[in-house]
Image 1 (cartoon, rainbow, N blue to C red):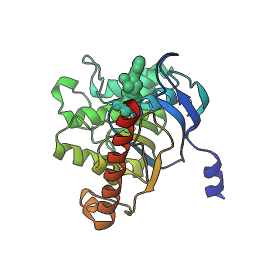
Image 2: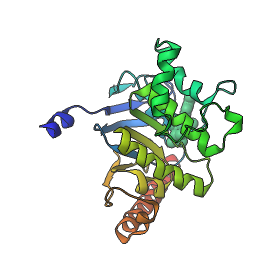
Image 3: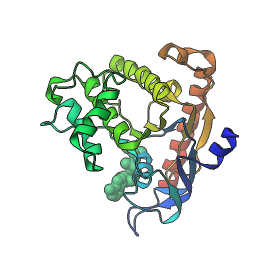
Image 4: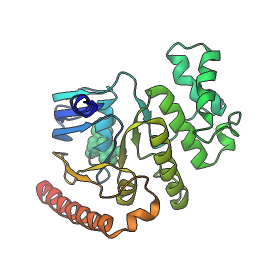
Amino acid sequence: MKQMYEKSQPVFSLSHVSYRYDAKAPLVLADVSLHVQPGEIVVILGPSGSGKSTIFRLLSQLDSPEQGSVTSPEKVGFMPQDDLLLPWRRVIEQAMLPLEIQGFKRKDARRLVEDRLQTFGLEETADKYPKELSGGMKQRVSLLRAAMAGQNTLLLDEPFSKLDALTRVSMQEWLLQIWEEESLTILFITHDLDEALLLADRVLLFTEMPLMTPIETVVPLGRPRNAEDITKPEAQAVKRDWLQRLKHGRERTIAASD
Ligand code: ADP
Ligand code: MG
């Protein structure tokens, strides 16, 4: 019964969406459809400059499509590539901000954030300022703030791409843990094939510009999952397939623009 309800109620969806930045510009999205069900982590994988962030622009209602329809929750937590923390606010105050904007009293906002500091590994750093934090810690704060804003539905746009490789892996494993503990629904953008394999239930691979119907892969790895799992042969076979498709997509894009 639950399954049927969820199937009919995606958290995020694009149906036959076409979009361009202005009337004379080429299409960035050409008849794109995608759906994210409650509790899923879906990863959008595609080359840089292909239009991935544009999908988030539409899902966060910053703009509307030329054709097709977009649905997303009223409140969405958005985490961009840069952490965009306010230098003059302490960690706890960064996370309180979206609640204050929604009209919560400071005292109540503080209590709600305090309840989640431990889960996000920020108990010790609650009173610190951004300049006192490492890159990984800043991303944790940014994610907590997004979770407070979005009532557990998150759009994450390459959030770990600026971290060094080892910090990135520990943040990815940490995100998976939070996702399970907090029953989050996540749509995650990356151009990193390993990140997609580690995180996703389903990967939507875009290979050509403009973006069209993505190629969907159900990642053949169980849960809980850790960074070593992506070295398994079944995961590496998927990665090989993606690399070939991306290469062909690049060739077709170049041919089309000649
Ligand atoms: P990605 O996130 O995959 O790197 P984007 O969605 O940022 O790609 O960009 C897709 C295309 O749209 C690019 O060609 C980019 O130059 C163009 N674009 C992105 N943002 C804007 C904007 N604000 N105005 C006009 N063109 C844009
Ligand atoms: Mg982008």
